[in-house]
Image (cartoon, rainbow, N blue to C red; front, side):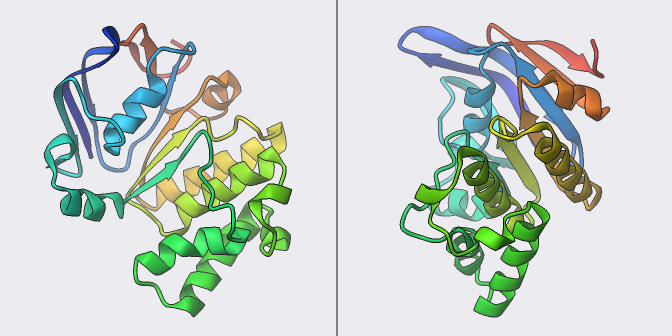
Length: 222
């Protein structure tokens, strides 16, 4: 599902990622962790082509992401669900509209989109807020809407950047359970986190980034 070869990313002369090689098979669940500034968010951005590598290659679902045309990249992104650290919610759309927007764009009918969106919102404890606008939601509620939007169209690959950052322990546990269920159904999942309680709650492959390098690749704890 994911292959990185000699992946390097430099910003303003500072090397964020340093020649990373990585293989992730379809259906894997893995955590990406490391100190702030280690390159976790940058690595995720390279996987969905929000950033382009300075050197090396990025393959997702058999396609070299950093060389795709705009049209082919748009088609590939339909298979990828992304939970952004800054949420990126549509401010003038309700919670339900934020979740159904992507589903309708994918061609799902209004009734089916509404049903699927409501189901995932209910699983995340947000169905009673479906008519609210993002501006009246708490940070944790906004985060759950962003998560619902990424999960609703059942992508083959889910990339989550600190998805539990604004959630309490109970909600974080619920989210992890939901991600496990989706992974069990066949989705590949990569979660970037600094929360070691998540790593301890679920035995999964864990990558530790340190100064732009994969320092560790294995089970947790190291």
